[in-house]
Image (cartoon, rainbow, N blue to C red):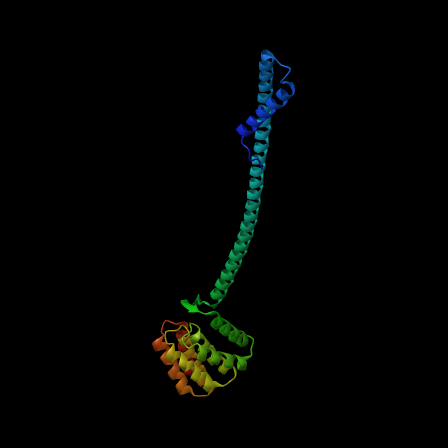
Length: 253
């Protein structure tokens, strides 16, 4: 590390340059020659001082530049490290956001599967949850497949679990039909009477009364069969079942 100032170095050079030659030739020079020698020495010293200062400046500049380069390289290294950390964090954040999005999507899909959906049943809109829909559909598959005994069990279980369902009236009606197909006419009558009493506004109510009349006919109870048919014509005169009741009443007379 340089500790001497430029002025001190220059003074030392002048003193040294002046002292050495003059000591060797002091006894040989006259006044003019001495002055000329001093001037020459001063010129040499000035040149030497400039050259030395230039070398000192160059060295100082190089040292300063080297320090700046080192600092710049260190800063660039730190920036590279920070950039790498940012990229890692950005990647982790992106992955976390994707996982969160997938989780929300999966959760939303599951919730949608559990949410009731609107269906049209005999011309009426009703909200039906997925489990309710599956239970009813499974029971009807059994009925349509001719497995009336198992269908009766499934339909009976459905109306017990979902008494307020939009499918409840239909399930109760088809339960009566399942009993009718099994020739259990008393159970068929009981099942259809529930439709008439609890779901009187249902589109299945007129058909339920017609099924009651049919069950009484099978039991050879013509009196109650006629009573059911007349009730049907009276309560639901505009229904297709009422027209069938009128036709049957004409035959039973």
